[in-house]
Image 1 (cartoon, each protein chain N blue to C red):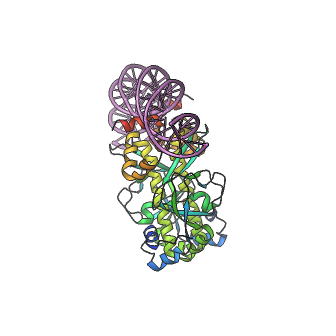
Image 2: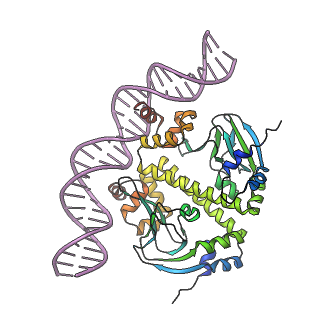
Length: 193
Length: 193
DNA sequence: TTCATTTCTTGCCATAGGTCAAGTTGAAGG
DNA sequence: CCTTCAACTTGACCTATGGCAAGAAATGAA
């Protein structure tokens, strides 16, 4: 049994002035709903992704290993967000990061070729894509600035406030590496509150 | 006297498999060469940019002020790079950062409206744009990971190696804030070598 | 040339956060 | 119910980097 597509959920994700309700319906055609079990890797280092996903429910993270083999969480993916490794998907190069499901998840899968075709066909979709990229770029810029300007405690509080589901569902060690501190330090920060 | 456009320079910048020599010539039509004096702001916090630039020679930086009023360099722009604040240019919202010329510069200016038109007309241009954005996204991701994984000294050495012109032309304090350390610390790091 | 301003260096001490190691607590499988 | 493994906490100590302030060097304007 194939679970069915939830148009109004997709309408929220693909919210853009140049995308009409009709466009969304058309877009929904390239989305298939899937379940992903906790622990599954939706992308492995070294492979070239053939798709991206939209996360309906659950939590994932992307991570890399530094030169000491230490595991560093690069990003979390929360409900309503795109699960995508932009550089490797668009440039067809092997990914340098892994993406792993931290909980059971429900996602919409989008094949790259089908995406690509609609992308060039629909101006609104392109504009949405560019807006999405701008926002991501902005977020990562903010993130590196925050690493400079804010203390570990402030960064933690910011994460708590803006992405509460992360601190609820992710193990402390992943949150710590995402914040750029050790798990001991994060434990102390939490205690201090 | 209007300085003339250097097509082969632009061909390097707009290097992409889907952009032919003819496409580049067409693109060059929306570029005007300009000189910018050291100290000029090409973008001021709070204003909405109407253009982006390509840097032929010179050095610029973008920066913000943190809540203590401390000046933080977010990025440097070196020769051959795009001088652009993506979020505010594409989403037509006031910029949260400033962009300032650290030396006299030669640039190609591109008006947003003219860009926008060609962008939707030429598939190759769109693909180039997306590739450029992917790369930027990748770079910022790397940057935040580097802030976590590498020591101040390693970050400095990386910058030295990959963007030597920055350490040659920018004052120490801007390099320090870009690296996320104080100018005293950077001075000591330099000395230690 | 001189004066003023910025840039850079350096010393002293403070501190956030790291490292390592030893527990606890807790959850999942047999 | 017991065992195991991961998650989390906590303590003792260490280190990279910050804050502050003084001075030296370089740059630029008059």
